[in-house]
Length: 225
Image 1 (tube, helix red, strand yellow):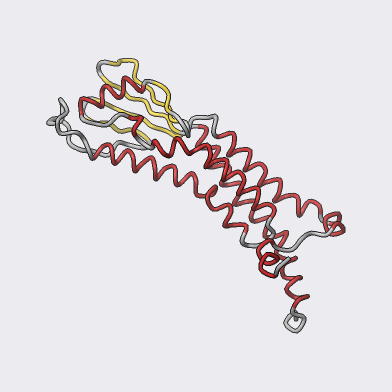
Image 2: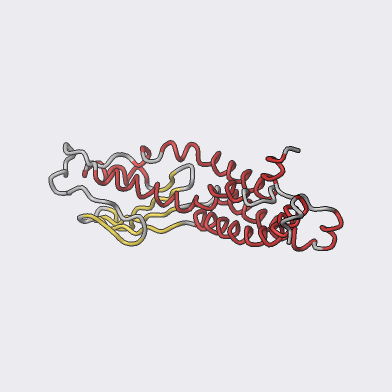
């Protein structure tokens, strides 16, 4: 193995070392495994919910966003949005929804790779999974802002509604419409996965950094002291 690959992958754990300190080395692997499962399971749960109250809908309208599709009263909400000049919901984040499952699977594999690498470079593989929840919020806000600030001036009620930024989380509204939005279980599973990865790297460093220092000392005995 080349010096570059050896530095990148990090020191390997001998059988005797593993037997002597099994919990130390299995802990980060187990935590990363939990993170991967949480990420994978999040695909099947909602990431975001919104309830809309309107005079013509006394029971309210509901929208649920999974990572790859929308469910709920999409057609009815699109009908209301049409009057104020807002584009159909299906046009928002079309690429993100079509690629989301593959991106989550890619993050799953990257975190698995991070468990195999025993050097500080393992963090780079896990960055996408750690930042994924933040990226979801940023992307959601971007599309809400884009749709709200680019209303069709030819819409029937365009003169009565000024461009606005819909509320991403919490209570909001415009005119006679009120909304309440919150994150779903899928999003919180992704957050939990990111948290597990951060914790996993604490144990990862505690397990493998002494081996890295020991290997560096053996390679440079003059500076080991």
